[in-house]
Image (cartoon, rainbow over all chains, first blue to last red; front, side):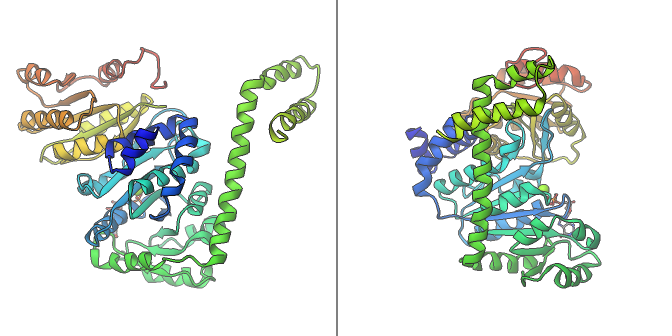
Length: 306
Length: 136
Ligand SMILES: Nc1nc2c(ncn2[C@@H]2O[C@H](COP(=O)(O)OP(=O)(O)O)[C@@H](O)[C@H]2O)c(=O)[nH]1
Ligand SMILES: [Mg+2]
């Protein structure tokens, strides 16, 4: 543990990569290493890109990596695909758009899927961010698909959350979960080369943009259109306190829920309560609500009150 | 944890139908497949394998230039101290198979290899049983 941590801090890429795998695989390793690196973290700026599939997030990130590199920054990228099913395999292809940076020593790109620990995806992302931070990245960029709970969870751990949209998405914007609209620090309308970008911009500004969140139009292939976005990201140095607190509220809430879930699962595995009571319910000795109450009673005594 | 497999197409020629089909078949077989697309240099392949911490690399190549490219991949893996098995496929003439194997490439799939065969051999390369479904 100490050795792998030293190697990460010294900039050893293989060690970083192995440690990320171990994080995903091994709960105890995860806790131990995060506790240990806690103090050497906090230097990196964390930027999350979220939005529906196909709007150009990966292409945009590729351009942004290029711009940040030209400003002398080291960039870590975490590509999350929460669409992969809980069983079966997954095909992770976001990297395709960024492969020109694959051999740059100042870039490290890692793809993650939900496989292995679907419920804890955002927890793993949070911990991978910490590792990349300890490694010495100036910027850590997270791409996540969608506008659902995972995106909101991830936004709590980022300094800047960017919701990427494209022209002619009026109805889709309306259908989007309010949650993600609220946590966005910047709206990007990508594919501004397509007709309808101004309309979408107007729509965004009038209907959803009560907080005066900036709206930026980009064409992901065109560097000049992306530079203002990077300037804006770099400018967001200090998050206003109320916003910081509201992010922390969200983060703490999901961490508490995570933690209770973890403890509960540990207890259930250990105690065999589920098996025992399932038998009783199946035999019609007791009903399932009674079983639930009994399990909960034992659980609170043994886990939560300890 | 699912095993992770990198699928990359080396060489300068354009299309990647074969590589995509194999990538999808491995996904359906339960693996986590990282796909890099076309025109990858050996350096890109090995750097990606490192960053993604994959358990296996599958290379596809359609041009005649595959031997030096595959050789370079194997050299770089050694240089990087990465102990990852490699298989390859594409339009590979039968005469080249022994050459590739001698380089350390674990399996070579010529044109017309069935997906079923590829998945079977991949399971073996990853040290998994027949009906393991990619789960370990
Ligand atoms: N016309 C246009 N197409 C774009 C732009 N940005 C990305 N694309 C294309 O949109 C498609 C989806 O891009 P991708 O980056 O994979 O989207 P993601 O799913 O949001 O990551 C690709 O075919 C891109 O080439 C843009 O600014 N304008
Ligand atoms: Mg993408």
